[in-house]
Image (cartoon, rainbow, N blue to C red; front, top):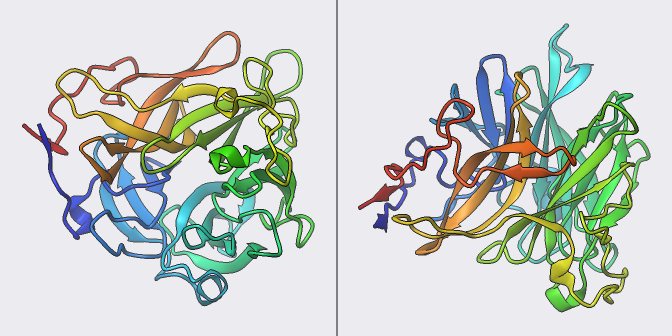
Length: 361
């Protein structure tokens, strides 16, 4: 079984070349965004958008913005967006009458550098038209230990908004946002550190995504999803929880997700043992091995169904990547599990698809 290459025409991609994906629902349309990626060369820049009506078949819908805005490119040198976060901003407007505002948080950086920035664009719908609002968080190599990429937003029950971000370097951070604007409540705030790994594993942690779970009794639980190790070949998804947005986040074994000091010294002897493993590379009979699944988000549909959304690479062609969508379930203990097979139909239908159009036998 061989893997079909993709063309430079994004209308042929489907879920291929989707990296660091996020899904939202706007009316009867699902919209996916992520990193401006194409395994074959330069990709359209400005925030890839795809649409679907069934979470299975996806169509190219262009980019949110026409390339990387001037300030983002001037600060970081970015040629495209990384890890866009798309969400409907509750109870707000985008200067368009009574329509709710949609927010797109984009990351601008270059590989291996923490001279990076997170910007914000707004629109009256998930498909735009989008207006750039500028950079809201900036970090600089040699000045800051943080890396301002991989933004994601969550809310407390009372509506307080929080943004998580970070990658390698000194780890993952969370900071409070202004409830009206979606920008940092305190200008210049770089937040509180909530997860970090030691230099012995290159501090390899990124892609934070927090989901609030409200229980019938007691405080809300905040579930932190992260990706460990190299995005090229060893990515896997881990999870931990906390009863406050700022932590401490602990895995199921009560190990702290901060396992390194700010100078990178380890706080535990086995950094791979931290974080409850949720999804890793795998293979099924008759299919190519799938490697490095990671940088996930979580989508909850209007009927309450939860889905993990992530990208994955092909074992036979690691440069090629695609998005995958899996049903996610919550155990009585409050911890999540994911289906071993990708979503292919109505809830409860987890049949293994061996006729994937990305493959040719």
